[in-house]
Length: 88
Length: 239
Image 1 (tube, helix red, strand yellow):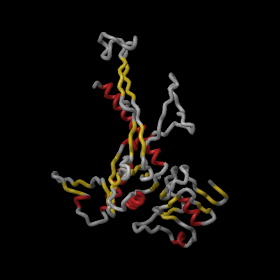
Image 2 (cartoon, each protein chain N blue to C red):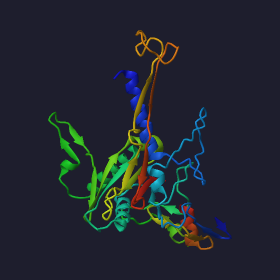
Image 3 (cartoon, each protein chain N blue to C red):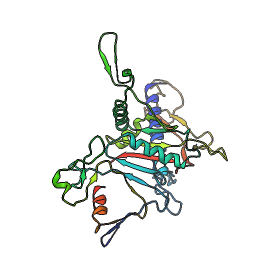
């Protein structure tokens, strides 16, 4: 459900306390992650170029766990929340 | 049992098992089924199978790469709902895609330690080297999950990994099992033969049920399933 610049997630099963744990998802057509999702190295650190590090943009690691449940809200005006929404 | 009867029985068992696992109910808000027998208008009731019942309450994890951390999250979630924090044994029923991903994830994880090499490779009598092993259980912090591969999930979910974890511990207070199957008394499996002219073998004399020179075998039965602790479950799927 979209309300202005907010995305509010509602569960079809209602408020039963269900939690969804989601890793960033690949585009089913291209099999690629969204631009804000970056691969991680063996230590779990994101692999970023110098330009990306200095860009001020928010990036989400590919192994990030995003927890959503009924009522979870993403504010698309907020860079961090917008990136998380784009990732899933 | 002849070949036709054998095939019919296998088909019946397959349809019954798939139904008890995946069926979605056809009963509307007024308690009426949405389908009827076209000849007799007799209502045909279908109840929810195991997966639709637990989907309403289970926690879910959509992963993009299966790792040991994903399994730990599943164990954590299940332990929070279990009676004891340790000593739990959970069974993960998985499709073939997830089964293969589990083998790879545990093999990679094990390779990070200085384990005995025979876990990863061994030399055979003919001098060949066998690489790899079969991993069936993962244990951490006093809790373990055992993986069982089931092809019926592969038929439904194809090449994407999918698995269901259900705590099968019976209710401690009432002793009620976590999952119960229901049927009418004696109605679980009813096998009928409908012989035509020539009997069942096509060459016998005697009483027949049809003027057509052909016979029919019919199996039908009543079955339903109830999950009494659907909240103690976890679904893992590849996104």
